[in-house]
Image (cartoon, rainbow, N blue to C red; front, top):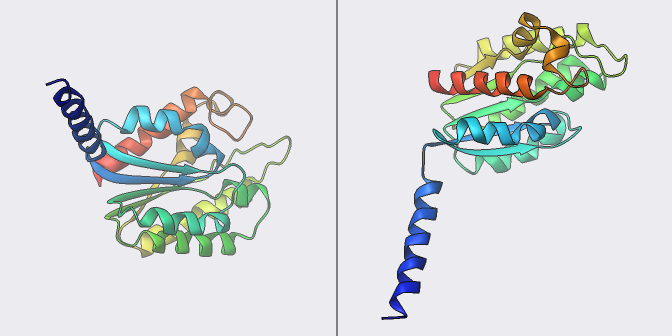
Length: 195
């Protein structure tokens, strides 16, 4: 009798683990430091409805995350959120190359029902590095990409920033504050619900 309790408890624990991993459809979020810093809020807001996998790496550009996207695609997500391009803009990468990279990222998730591109904050200010025109250009490229690929839509982080006092939504002109992260992840949740 003494041995049955641990086996039963172990079996129950295994079943709970399996059940938890099967809650909701699979959603992947791929990004840079904005995603990495927001991972806790992403899970707090989305985990009740989705099985979420988050991959955010500080300082990385679109070209540096293509392999990570291919690995995430192996999880067979129903929906994908790509929040990349900010570092491309801050590092003055050509817009055409950034959009080419975004196309490759989108292609990595071709099996997903919905793919969301998160637009760039056009009021970026990294210690005086204010690439407004480049951010607008990348956002226009994202709009074009979304118009060409049926399962691609935009999450308008640029509009969320523009509708608020920008300094209150970022901690340093680039990374969202706690309030900014909450608004950004709520925009993720709204997009995912509408898919």
